[in-house]
Amino acid sequence: MRTQVAIIGAGPAGLLLSQLLNRAGVATMVLERQSRAHVLSRIRAGVLEQGTVDLLNRAGVGARMAREGQHHSGCYLTHDQQMIRIDFAQACGAEVMVYGQTEVTRDLYRAQDAIGAQHVHGVKNVVLHDLAGKTPYVTYDLDGVTHRIDCDFIAGCDGFHGVSRKSIPESVRREYEKVYPFGWLGVLSETPPLHEELIYANHPRGFALASMRNPMLSRYYIQVPLSDRVEDWSDAAFWDELKLRLPSDLARDLVTGPSIEKSIAPLRSFVSEPMRFGGLFLCGDAAHIVPPTGAKGLNLAASDVHYLSEGLIAHYTTRDSSGLETYSEKALARIWQAMRFSWSVTTMMHRFPEHGAYDQQMQRVELMQLSANPAAQRLFAENYTGLPY
Ligand code: APR
Ligand code: PHB
Figure 1 (cartoon, protein in one colour):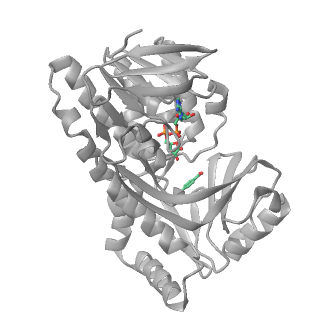
Figure 2: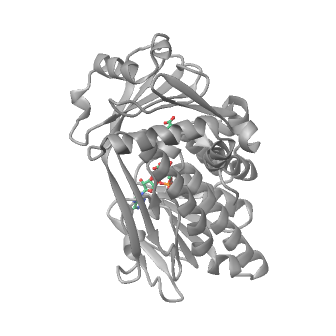
Figure 3: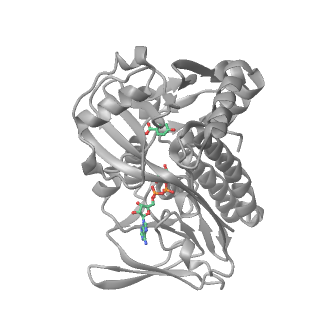
């Protein structure tokens, strides 16, 4: 079997790349190791930068997002019972769209079905071949039969644990990693959100976040030690701890309910360079991971897909391969900016085991600057709502 671009992974990066390429007449084949139901069962953040919204609209998958998404022109940072609102609109004239990643993925699948895009789910033993040569190909197993896909290029959209990044020789890869000494315990509940905007809380007991999916679906997080397990936390214990970390006048209004999803995720910052090796291009979590504090994961996958799809479409339609030659450098320039922002907000808002009184003073002063300094608010707002592509 032959295609123009073989795409490994049917997460947001793989599906969005497939959708944009197919709409431009570039043939693709998406290989996904999980079932579609499993992919759609994932609960992930959905704070979309304007660039991501624009890209989804260009891909023809923006209709439901426009109907059901929520426009947010600000968010809150809290500490010492104070509420600091960052007014995105006033600070930089931008906003974000709150629309769950699960819904983005669902919309992408529907659009891919409508154009008859090629997907194979449940694949095993995906192996990338001849990446440094001129005839890259992919082999995979399905129902005990080994298949081969010959292609011009391979897009590694298979996330942090995928096969693509590891197919680049270690001698070529430069990897940067920071593992944070805590995790996030997240709860999804069919309750009305605490507030109409997101609330990020810095508290001596630890970080907390009040977010949402829609007017009757709320998402909350509290920072927990890495040694904690989900079974250590009853719903009641979670709600009690969350209330302790929020300003008391807000905590009083918190509507609690049974968790319909509860999980602990570790936090790490990770980048693997370069994002191209011969015929292989890495996209999204396959190349980088951000701590969720800055809500950049999905948005970086989108900007990678923007750069790669533009490069591939130009290659096939005008024989101009300059976008492919500059892909890694261009994507990494934006990724490192998002890495800095995610790291800085994580450092400002969490309790670190090794932090002393001086470090906590630094957090307090940073938050006071954000409260009083328009330049500080603009820098935060520009990064949170998304730097230009
Ligand atoms: N073969 C085929 N598919 C694979 C393989 C493999 N060897 N390894 C992983 N996959 C699939 C996974 O099952 C997953 O569906 O690749 C997909 C990768 O999707 P994501 O992990 O969602 O990564 P990405 O598409 O880059 O989206 C990034 O998702 O993880 C969040 O926070 C992250 O919001 C960000 C977004
Ligand atoms: C979420 O709603 O899951 C969410 C929102 C913002 C973040 C992280 C997670 O920064």
